[in-house]
Length: 412
Image 1 (cartoon, helix red, strand yellow):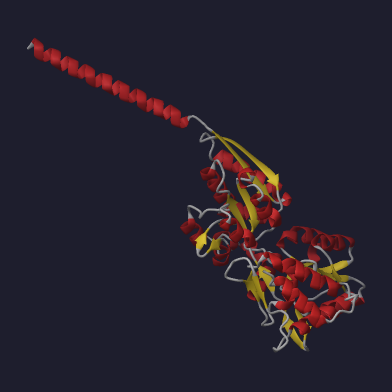
Image 2 (tube, rainbow, N blue to C red; image 1 turned 90 degrees about the vertical axis):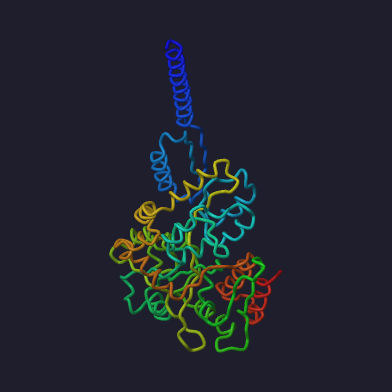
């Protein structure tokens, strides 16, 4: 009997001892899991987005408080030059970055971007065009942030009615009569596409993903390259037209010398502040080409958020990129920066639907094409359009100018 009691006592003691050891290891594991580790992330975004992104970063840190010791810093980096800055040194580049969608293919090909971990969610929550812009061969590599990277016509209602802004001819006439200007940046091939994009002539990326095809110099068709060149030359001759950069356009608006201009939603807040109740926005007008009214086209695109595949904290970089692009932060971006959301629910809000700039962009989207162009496109088009904007001072043959431009665009 005593032997049985002793064995029972020893067994119970063993259970208590094992339970105590198990409990101790559990507590140790819990303490280890709760111990914060350092997570350092660098975020690149446009200088204009600094206040917005810092607010979003602060909210992210609060949301994940206790999960890590965060040190997240913002650095200004122009979205148009993001690819080149990042590929110069991937390991030293930002962990999270915003960029224009036309850079996606190059970033994915270089290994800077990996397929996102929550692709199905992104596909279901965002507009189809923005999902396409964030994809390479139907695989999503970045988080859609905006669906507004296009252009349209801003105009001052003091000078133009809704009917006036339907044709560029009428707009130029009004500008001439009032000794004012309508502007468009012909030093940027992005805007010059407006004259060629709805003509039946084509430009795009070859299957190699690097070189371009282009028929903008075609001489046998209903609308020929020379017809567009002559139309542009006539526009440039108007005293009411000026080829100006985006910065010069805004300066002219503030000075009162510019009463209309082609630009995008990033200037919506500044334009509304400048013109107040006279602030207007519409799709691009038609222009006269070969004695008919031809609707001006546009490139469309999106801003995206990427997570650097070389990030030392890649999982956290993905979480932050997803956070920056979520529904609530896209709404905040619209409220503070006037940029159109790619998130379906955010884009359907009454505030977004009623915004003049967004409405104009949506109206123009019928005549817009997703930008997929190789690097050789930009300089030859800028040289061609710059020559016409200057009045063709060398009196060069227009067909020769077109042929030179296309040769540069399609160079291998």
